[in-house]
Image (cartoon, rainbow, N blue to C red):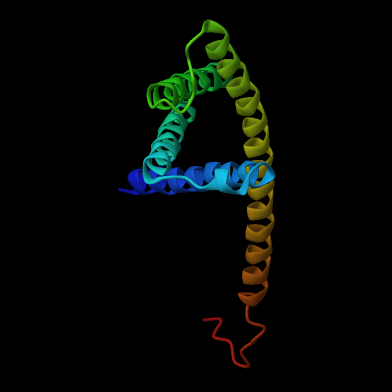
Length: 155
């Protein structure tokens, strides 16, 4: 149950992140272009879910990290092509358009992978710092009592 909850939570986060970028780019251009329909939202939510599911590749510790990243990239590239090209959101009439979509996806993947890596490392360091601080506070609160009995039974 915890795995499904984690996958759905990450899928919602990725959907929110994608929609935020979508709206930011829409606001740069035309304000009316930032409006999306329910089908577009569901397409983005499906892609967010696929991103979340693709992260399961990183949990396979027997495979070298380079291959895990490569598997993750290939799965996301295939999902991107299937979801957005088959839905008609990206034009794929010529080989040049498909190649351009792949290049743009690869650049965005590299940028997002780097950002997520940096953010996760900083969160991990922050968590470690907070945990160490809590342990130190707990250790100070649970010091041995300085009570010394007046009468000892050394029998």
